Amino acid sequence: MIVKASNSLWHEVGPMGVASGPLQQSESIDLIIVGGGILGLSTALHAAGAGLSIRVVEAGEIGEQASGLNGGQVIPGLKYDPSSLRARFGEARGERIIAFAASTADKVFDLILNLRLDVPQRRSGWIQAAHEPKAARAAETRASEWRQCGADVAVLNGAEIISLTGACGYVGGWIDRRAGIIQPLVYTRELARAAIENGAKIATGTRVTRLLQNIDGWVAETTLGYELRVVRSRLRQTPTPTTSSRAARERHYPPFVPDRDRPIAAQPRRGDLTWRTGGF
Ligand SMILES: Cc1cc2nc3c(=O)[nH]c(=O)nc-3n(C[C@H](O)[C@H](O)[C@H](O)COP(=O)(O)OP(=O)(O)OC[C@H]3O[C@@H](n4cnc5c(N)ncnc54)[C@H](O)[C@@H]3O)c2cc1C
Image (cartoon, rainbow, N blue to C red):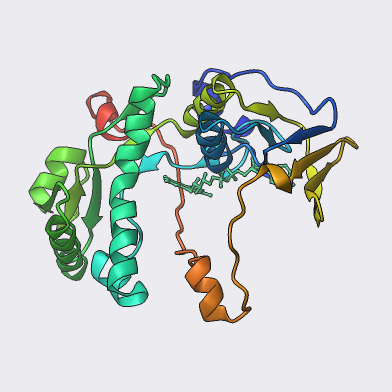
């Protein structure tokens, strides 16, 4: 079964976004964006703001896949601690990745504030609770590393975890106060609205079936028979690696850092805990 955001809790409790429809004709534009999730719509918003003509092409509805189905946690970090990132990517690149990761929650909440996006949100931190002493020691190390990077974090003991969450049985953990939660489907729909207000065009119900590069630029073919064209002469050229060695490719295109999560939704256990358990 394919899970869609239109079957999700976020859809049930959130307002509909801007209306879009399928592509109606072929077009020549500066930038084709395939996919109307957070990544595509944020790119559309910023690129349209920089003056490019944009067409976002989405096979389903806005936020239909991961962007409308995720847990909504906005956490300024990666699975790897700062020391692991430095060890894995080297000092200079590691520091850049750490600075990027540290800036992400500010970016999201500042965007919501500055563009007045109507997104249910709460910035009350993120707690990683530890179920046994070894995990609690790992949490302390993690908190200490992020504190050294200037982050607003603290180590928690079991009693503090109970007081903050109502959850018993944890021996400790840490809180990252830079983090928060948003309604991700509404956020995605609001990004679409803001991108359109910046001049981007969005087609839903239109799947890109093929991307072709030719002498003039790029062509995207769609299920509806219409084509989108990007003419190369209108764009600034970006140098690409001339060697196919893996090291050279990775210098140019940094490898992805893997990430995994499993969201669930449940009734809050008590009314007075609603705000602590993800209610907005
Ligand atoms: C279960 C789960 C929980 C998560 N929880 C969190 C969390 O709590 N916090 C967090 O920060 N991140 C979380 N994530 C990660 C986060 O959801 C994703 O990183 C983010 O939504 C990716 O956005 P995207 O725009 O790249 O992808 P998507 O939202 O998947 O968008 C891609 C879009 O492209 C469209 N598309 C695909 N192929 C075509 C085509 N050929 N033509 C046209 N359109 C096409 C799809 O329909 C889709 O809408 C979670 C992810 C999952 C799966």
